[in-house]
Length: 63
Image (cartoon, rainbow, N blue to C red; front, side):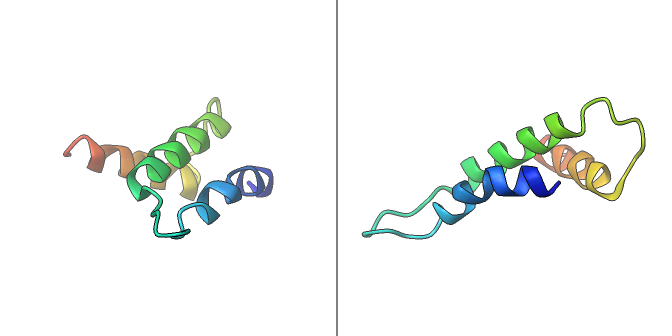
């Protein structure tokens, strides 16, 4: 998890406004959800983070 965070931290930092240009929170969310799902792919336990990802995907799909 720590490696995932360090890899994605630049994307989170880039979200902050810079020179009047704002980051896109929806693109960031999509990127982070896809990457965290890849990290936990094959993990058969429903850890708290997997439950979170599962719930967020359901919300995106309108469930």
